[in-house]
Amino acid sequence: MFILDLILKKRNGMKLNWDEIEYFVRGYTNGDIEDYQAAAFLMAVFFQGMDADETLCLTEAMLNSGDIVDLSEIPGIKTDKHSTGGVGDKTTLIVAPIVASCGVPVAKMSGRGLGHTGGTIDKLESIPGFQTSLTREQLISNVKEIGLAIAGQTGNLAPADKKIYALRDVTGTIENISLIAASIMSKKLASGSDAIVLDVKAGSGAFMKSKNEAEKLAKMMVEISRGAGKKAVAVLTAMDSPLGMSIGNALEVAEAVDILKGHGPTDLKEICIELAANMLMLGGKGSLDNCRKLSAKSLSDGTAFEKLLEMVKRQGGDPSVLEDTGKLPMASVKVDYKAERTGYIIQMNAEKFGMASAALGAGRKTITDTVDPSAGIVLLKKYGDIVEKGEPIAILHTSKKEKNSEALEILKGSVLTGEKPPPKVPIILGRIE
Image (cartoon, rainbow, N blue to C red; front, side, top):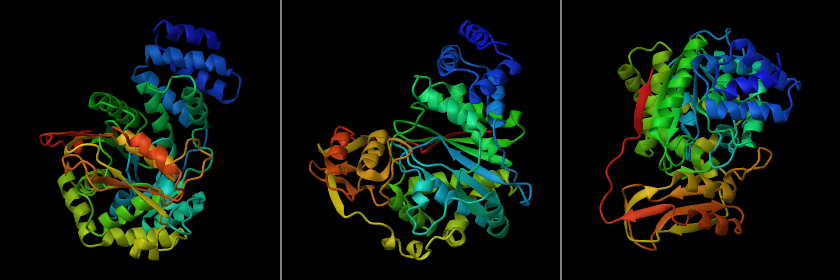
């Protein structure tokens, strides 16, 4: 078998078989296939696409290129969630404690932020002392004893995906649904959970800009899960505006705590209850309606917040900063972002707010960059609110004054106003089982 034959076959729109796809993944991962050959293959896939069988094979080949976490020692149905990325998305910090407090174990491996989207691990590391590097034994022990652990990805999970993604990133082959789905699901399946809830976002701040694109991706990932023998549900959620009122690591931890204490913005609460309910349903806790009630109760009675405190203590963090979020890292410089015109907010570009937050120090341009845990943006107004010209829409937080000018430049034109209130839009766009 030769890589040129595979390139030509896919270039001409023909279907690849499992042996051919495994040959490509194995050969590129171990260095037998050159970068320029792999780039040509990926570009052929980009233009010709892959069907469901090819996508499942690509996923499994990348999954089997490295370690697969064995969680069989943990009793019960282990659940996981994955978000396709958004701005202000701190749902894991809320959803995982809800689910664990209702008796369904959560062993979650999360990543760091890159570009305009934040990462759960960065958020958790804004809690003083919190350890995100856990051994497999520590992860399993914590989940067995308290039902919950959130850690950074460890070991050699899906190394083929890491290498292929890096090449896609520099060869213009990112935006292909089969390649995206295989990349996400190879890592999720390697993480070892029995059931997965996928939060697939659509809008200006998401990877998939339209609901139609998000729906195609969601269906493909659910199909991959089924093909791999795992239960999965996808929830389509809106990401045209930032989620909640805070963007940035410590700021988002504080907002997550607010939700867990029964307060906080309604859009964030609605998404968290829906995601948690789907995880609980897959975990065997009854109908979706019943699981929504269980989720809401765990917020109102404080059991979800207590579960977060347990996890923070177990992983070396200082729980007092959750009891009093004023102890979290705080920015030394704060500047208002003001409305450019009077009117109702009819658009709030989530991607620009994410980019501005990253520019303030909350994100990174490369994976090796360090983040400022105190940096970010607190929104004062959102979609549908009325503002006066010159009125603050948001407060920028940073530790370096010189970063404000770049962030303010990014935010120019990010908020559009109109004379009439805009129509109400749902935050939950659909569900695929």
